[in-house]
Every structure is written in C-alpha cells, then in structure tokens.
Image (cartoon, rainbow, N blue to C red; front, side, top):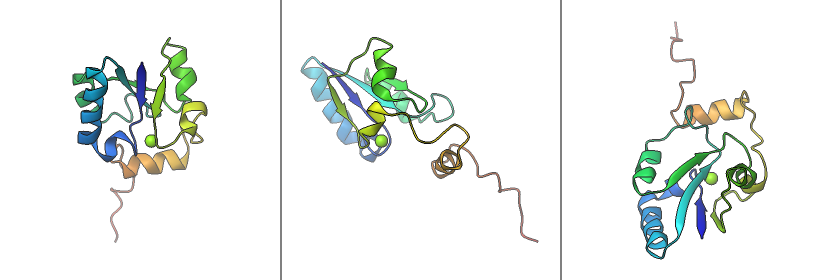
Amino acid sequence: MIIALDFDETYNLDPNLFDDVTRMFQQHGHQVILATYRHPELDYDPLFLRLEKQGVKVYCTDGKAKRPFLAALGINPAVWIDDNPFSIIKDSAWKHDSPELHAWRVEKGLISSGIEGVVAA
Ligand SMILES: [Mg+2]
C-alpha cells in the first residue's frame, strides 16, 4: 500500500520519529510518499532531500487538494497521515498572493518580510 505523509505540522514536528515509522512501513513492503500543500521551489525545505534519500518521493501540490492531485498522477494512497485532513480533499484557502500565505512564508524564513531595509530614524 501507499502511505501519504504530510509535511507541515506532521513530519516536521518530529522527523526522527517519522523516519523510523517510514522505515518500518518500507520493511513491511509498503511505499511512503510525502504530500504537501507547499510550492516545490518557493517553499522548498532541506528536509525534502532527507526524505528523498530514504526513498520517500516528495509531491508538492502548490495548494491543490492532495487526493485529486496525486490521482491525476496515478497515485492513490491507501492511508493518509496528516494534521489537516481537509487538505486531502480541498484546495488551500490561501491564494497565491494572499497575505496569509505571505505571512506564513515570512514565519518559515522562506522569504523576508520586505521591511528589513526600513531603519527607524
Ligand atoms: Mg500539515
């Protein structure tokens, strides 16, 4: 079976734990993939490489609902491990230019806030 693992607030809460769990799934003959709302370039995280090295392919849906996104690629996970089950069936509520997405990227250190150059007089 295919197990789809989420990234934010799931895998990245305890990567060592999920690495162990992934290894167990794989030892039992199952495939683990990562499915995240993140954008593949704008929201890249070094942990993606760590996952790929373990044979966990990373799928970034860029805010698209995960199940239909993967189904279009012929991938149909039997089990989902995700802190936000709605992300499996619903597109992200954050549009590409939304302030929420911008604030999240700033919080994650993916982009600057754009106000670093402002110095108090
Ligand atoms: Mg999540």
